[in-house]
Amino acid sequence: MLKTSLSAAISLILFMVAPALCCAESTDLKSLLNELKIASAQTRTLSSRFVQEKNLAIFSEKLLSQGRFVFQSPDSLRWELLTPVASGFVLRGSRGERWNSLNRELERFSVKDNPIMGIVAQQLLAWARVDLDWLEKRYHMELITLNPARLRLMPLDPGEAGFIDYLQILFADNRRHVDEVLLMEKGGDSTLLRFTDVQLNIELPENIFSPPEF
Image (cartoon, rainbow, N blue to C red):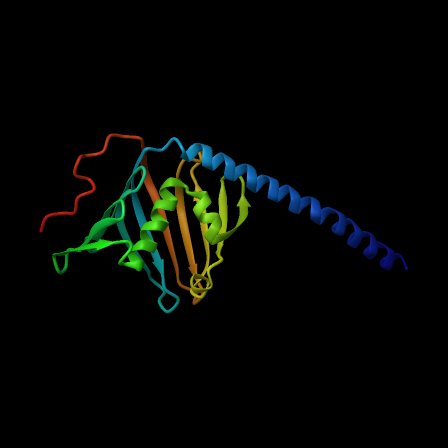
């Protein structure tokens, strides 16, 4: 009898507390998103290094590469792998060029005519601008931790959800940029991007959004 009463009491407490916890988490998430929007609005330019760590389910070793990332508001990008093989792309508005040092060829593209590059560019612009309006349309967001600010994003698009399990985003302490992006795939593969040496609102070289000359 005592055991039954105790179990019922615990169940009642959990029933009463759960909505409060959910409400608190929802409030914290809204507050954090508002902080991120305000902080990111101050960013005109961003320059950083990054390390990309690829984990394949069928291999025990990690695949590492390093590069640099440059952004200028509203829609200019440079995403460049420096090691082990130099490659990358630049974007100015809706048009850009991509390259690969192995074949030493330069390919011009438009995000309207190249949907894959369009998706890549949209994602990178979203992280650089912390474009939460765009992200909220494409992902269901969950607050993992408030300090440090860490969000989990689950794709709403069925096509994207077919191969991406979730994205996990870690923001800098000042809320003004992304520190890490973890992409978990359905098959068990994962990609971790760590951004380092982040510089905000610096003067950028005039040719930073031009491709290399081969």
